[in-house]
Image (cartoon, rainbow, N blue to C red; front, side, top):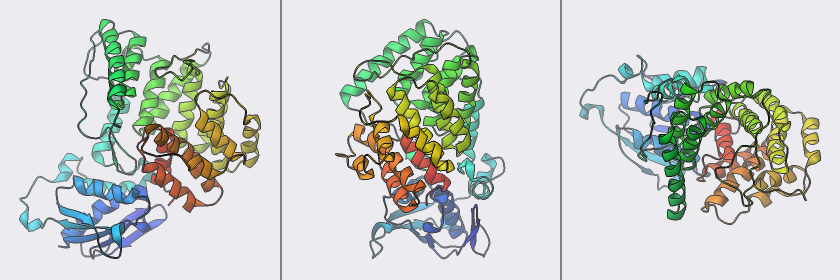
Length: 456
């Protein structure tokens, strides 16, 4: 955005022209584009000397508002911002920008981004390659480095013990919202940290052993230290590049950190390596109520591969992975988990007959140990539960309830979407994104759908 004309921003269906008059209405853009639209618009306003800006994000569930406020809090050229108190209520935010005449000249931002300024890069990403989610130069560089890095700071044979640095967000969502590690009760945190201490001691005693590397990474991940877990797994893969177990776990945490292409690469590699291997039960790090491990390594590889493909919008490839995953869904808990995603995938593809076939094996009396949310979603698809029954939970401030809202709610939202009611779907997805369980697959799927403009 520059010059005297209207601002332009990309949409896959064309270019939206926005007058530089101090009023920006985000309803004409995809939520996934909102952060870049606002950033470019503010840049253009400052260039034109428009220092008081009104950004209309609407009321809804506050997803756009949070995106806008997150961006404004990061910008050094914002003097202040507040919710509008007029008849628009908190459907708009008022922004005061720094006058360029009052700012000392600084080095061109483009020098730090390969000659492309972040705002201009965002325009190019949204117009030409929206599938990248327009993350900006720093985030893209970090993602690429994470997927391709071969050195993580400790030579083979030496332990890589990572400090716990809780400053800043763990992840930035696909719609630009910083996501922080969830708060834990003192008792729960102490338990998880004790488990991590044991894993660290085992790892320090034998830093080249695949199992000690895996458990170190898993214990980090249970504390929501997903980036640290990825770093540990990456070092393990330097030592054991053919380990389908390490690829399976790193692929999972690439999903947690919204690096879907890297997840597909890792999990696809794991699927190739595990072919022909004996089916092996995977031990639980967070045991269920009966302390019975339920999943196997083949299941976990194919299940997460299907999910990673689904999240990046490759629905046909996701279907293929879930069909393969059904071969290893050898108990009711695994069956309902795979059936749910396979059903949703068939519905997204418009294959109603195949979707109906998936439901044939699902009954109300199935014994389910830990995947009750998936079971309830499937019963809803069969018409044996109403959608609202899956959403009427006690309180969304309880972590378990927040998780159930993410898991059960995504099924409800997708049900509305494939049934031709995108407005109801968006309402459910926004409710999910107001929650705290941002590592839950239902949360990530809702976020990805909103970011890609599947609902708007």
